[in-house]
Image (cartoon, rainbow, N blue to C red; front, side, top):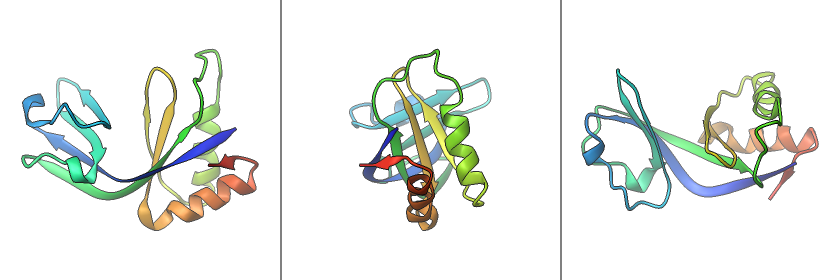
Length: 121
């Protein structure tokens, strides 16, 4: 399975209003519940108004479109990284999964996944 390194720095934030988010940015994940509005975006695209913010994330995506019948892909990757005490922040889209890792652990995460047979592109 191929994992594509993303060449951006990411931030995870909370905002009070959706209108605080620049919806023209090319890379956004927005989660809205009855308790919060969370945003994952490129660090350069973090809104001016955030209620909380955590910078210093790097990421990769699972290449290709994943069929919903596939089971355990994210679990296997997170397990490999958990065994090495590397925390993740995972986000899923209709097509695939994205995994963010703190920048100081990113190269170690990629090395661990490569050692387990994942192809890093």
